[in-house]
Length: 237
Image 1 (tube, rainbow, N blue to C red):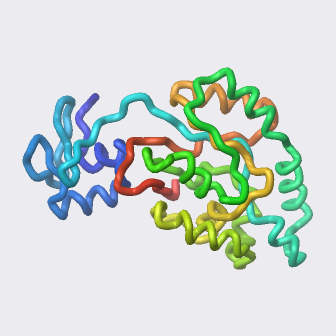
Image 2 (cartoon, rainbow, N blue to C red):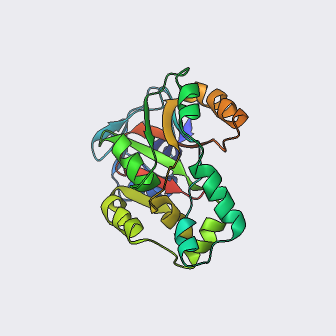
């Protein structure tokens, strides 16, 4: 491993974002080989980095998170006659596409965990998957979304179930620069949503290619990491 800036090393470990790492360093909560770390410090192989007395490790095997169907707030908009025909067509096509085909393809890979996204939302089911033992960095712009859904969320066409999901899962999630509409889409209950699949990083691109051959908008949306201060970090990238 080449030398890394201290804030990047902390962020790459999955503990928190770079911005949060800068705050931890400034507060004197980070130590490098026993001394208090400083902004701009370089971390080289063999160095020991601790946050609040707990050691961080560099990356071992990368575990990526994949989603094979788009999420959206479309049926809610349709109930008040606000959904466009194009959005409803996209939602119906997604809901009527069985996950069995994606599941069958995934059996060829070393899947660590898998769950479907339904009533507890993308973030709620991810929280269950992590089981209090791991953290996850989600890249919001990579999550497949029915495009009009963001407009509907901005118009507050939301569900009570979505707000319950936020109340339940929200304490485990930290958003960094993510627009309100995308937050709501990630908390929204889904009908016949896709699969969240955790698998080795060196296999993720191959599975994504296979799922796309099936016509699914599969995407690598995040990375599982060691348990950090924040369970689920969602950044706007």
